[in-house]
Amino acid sequence: MSERVVLYKTEEAIATITLNRPEKYNTLRGEVIQGLDAALREANSDNAIKVIILECAGDSFCGGFDFSDGLEHYGGIKEDGYDPGMDVHNVTNQYTSYLHAFMGLWRGQKPTIAKVHGYCVGGGSEMALCADLVIASEDARIGTPYSRVWGCHLSGMWVYRLGLAKAKYYALTGEWISGKEAAEIELINFAVPLEELDARVQKEAEKLASIPLTQLVAMKLIVNQAYDNMGLQSTQTLGPILDGIMRNTPEGRQFVRDAQADGVKGAVIKRDGPFGDYSQAPKSEHPRKRSELA
Image 1: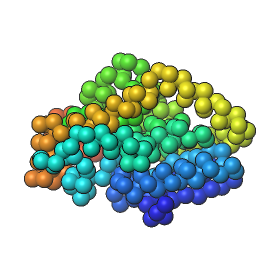
Image 2: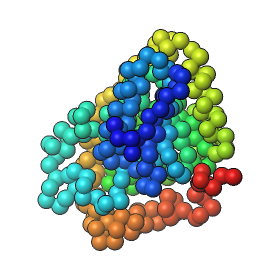
Image 3: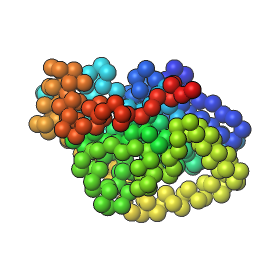
Image 4: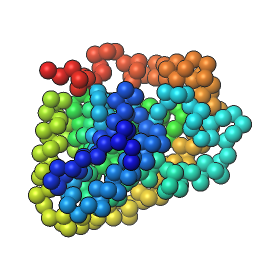
């Protein structure tokens, strides 16, 4: 596990995993996923740990997948390089799939809490929603801009956590919502003012840590099994396959060409401009920065 991009610490019965790329909005790439997977394995293997907190350094939880070096390092997007069979192999392989690491939050025996602030978008939202509990700042911004082009739900958690009407709406539009709105529609558990976020997450973690580990494991298992019975695993097999296909539609390839010609920022402006959200939202609608708290 790289201490540079993923940090791990324990205090009594609580383990805290911190994604540590604040200068890149904690965006996801291979070494981050590997570090997350290793940290979750360590916490779940330690009998002294009862609860796992996932947090991210800096002013945002996670800006999704890392496009700072362009899009070419993502497999299967070059004009002449798409191999559907290899793409299916990669996204369904537990050793290469990002989703497998995300679902370590869900399938690991111990309860997990995602502490969300700032931006939690794209793959970052997929990751956070795989946690058992999600607690966010009221002004956090959560969304799936990939709904508009170049992607598809990976984990299905946007579907399973919401009722049909909301699940369909956000899947089709990709609109972002605040942490407060996310709690109101029960996408997440709680939303609190940014200043109170750390204390609230700690309170919930300590509450869980007061319960016998075997009880926590049993109760998590029975809830997870109910969702497996509703088709969660089959949904998660289809989602990454569709994600690969959507990256290689004519529109998906055009998104890549726009990014190559105008930079990723230029391609994103074309994608989000009609909606006026994400990077195209008025400054007043963006989350506060934790670094600016008094």
